[in-house]
Image 1 (cartoon, rainbow, N blue to C red):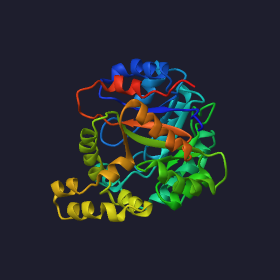
Image 2 (cartoon, rainbow, N blue to C red):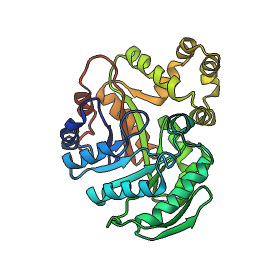
Image 3 (cartoon, rainbow, N blue to C red):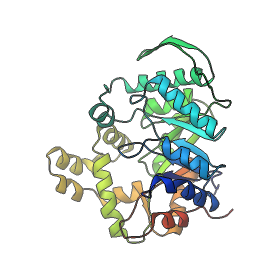
Length: 325
């Protein structure tokens, strides 16, 4: 068994943002080396990291993820440069295409050619964050004469969120690492080899949903809602088909397509919940997270799922901290 050198938690928590520097400090004090953000329909992906940087000046910081569809290339480069200046050598820029609802329905941008847009953005960011003047016509956008006025002394590594073969291989070829999501520990063994086709030494960040309670019924009730919310998005549905869960999830997909949300929720098997979302006592959760590491994840990052039992999320997060080496 190889213990991970890094071990992360996702912010923000439900606590007010002014509390987050303190929260980040408490997480670092019990052994968390990484604090990562997410960006869907709550807070943006950068502000919580800026606050965490002030409260935990030694931790790694990362976005998992921000989308190149919802920010222009120059704005994305400037924001990444600001975080890299605030946390030199510790900030990691995770980008990914996101999904049609986020990009098109909520942000009024056309969700077209996601693979090509992500690829082009990586190439632009490499040049821009190195301080180069960029005048380039890419396949999905053009930039004419942009140069960062304050390029970071240490350009941040770029990680790609990837689901299936094409984006996984792109992460291996052109990025510094990959961000995995919505997969089981056993699925890691199928996914990681595609990244390694691009060469060794890539960081494998695994976003792992963790619901810390030994009340399995309560955990499954909360997590079934997550499964129906996420895995009916076409990209995630196709991902689960590729991973081999078609037979298990088809009844849920059929009910959802028919507009019967209640039947869709009831159709999610326990097996799927238990595969994709870690739950149990803190010791059981740590053991399950270790299985991801044993199968190829180099940076496990907990995405905390509140079991809804009235417990304190921060206390639960502290209890999930890595065992001392």
